[in-house]
Image (cartoon, rainbow, N blue to C red):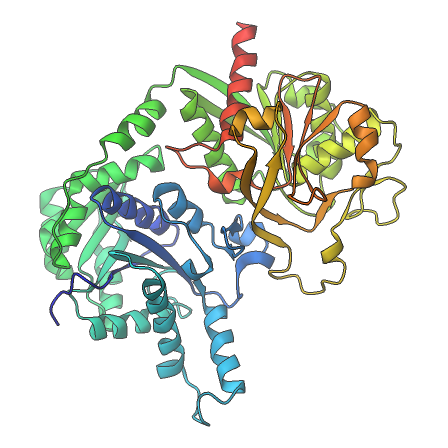
Length: 543
């Protein structure tokens, strides 16, 4: 089949040898590179687990739950995609085995298979292919990059791999190619890079009928031409299509590495398209140069209950970095387990930090530690940013210690508390299912003029993404305002408080939404930008 420039080209990104090689970052970086060349790009994540979505999964197993504009709870890799490319991700950009099987079984129950025996082939694989086709049918893209979760050889991934084998056969190799990400381990005692694991990984892929077109080789040492030739020979991949991705100290440098290796030119040649004349100079100037040579350095304390796990607050950490880029400032993140603050003096851990951020979360573990961190920030005039639960902690602390509402708390922890300053949203009271049932996705917020929030956004109306069941209790709104809390953002009907801030403080903001989901390295979120600006101002005053 000849290459057709009018249809979307599918780039399947598979992984081998070991997990956690960075398929998400590689896919996002390739997307960034192709966008710079003038192409329209979107990215799909195919996850092999049987959960319908990661919304009910433990962060220790899955990391953060990323929320799309249309309210889908998705894999954290979609955060990488949106941070690197301009396309907005939706529910259609995350496919799970659970979602596929749920759709197949639903069709079977409705009789859509006319009594046929429902099998993995063709019914499950057809369903996967249908999901893949729909995203390009709804909107025209030049490239659809599909990241296949897991590692080649996993039982769970087989239906997806079989589906892309069929898909490539149906579309033709000119319209659908496979990019295989693999590891070239370095044996320190022998001072050698070893290609055998990559050979085995490619062999496993070829066993199921997929010949990779491009190899992306993760390595901690330079990949010599001789090693590339060896990989080319044993893996049946052209030597110029063996691409080295050395370890880097910052993921935002990966697009520049792929550009230097010529990946964009190789991909466009394989699918019969002309490579545009764009480049990543703007990305290098606005992002990489600021990361490599910052003028300042500050320390931000992130107080949460999953701080020992890097991926649990992935978007928060990245958004802080983006705020640093905007202020020509490096960010040292001090990760504090909120549980350690429950029975200890917060001054011991928080003294000397330039800003305090409390991210979102659920449950009572470590909650009192977060409340103490909010109190420390308020009393010591330390710039404070509370996100979702972080806002609620600030409200609880203010109610207890400023408004003298003894024992004030969230009804999530104590439904019978005397002062439920945070309570269950009205439309959540009859909800029983846990998955996909929170207030999810993008909602409009009205911003009050003359506030810290308005100075950040320069807008009277914004849209932000949410993921919560509990909300500020308007019953206590007047009393808190009388004591110095400003309600600077509300829903269009005025019923839901979206942003709070304190009047007698250099920078103290809490928001019920998750601004980290809309931050990019070259377009930092306004609240993260101004939070870092306030923290930097505090640091410079001390010098």
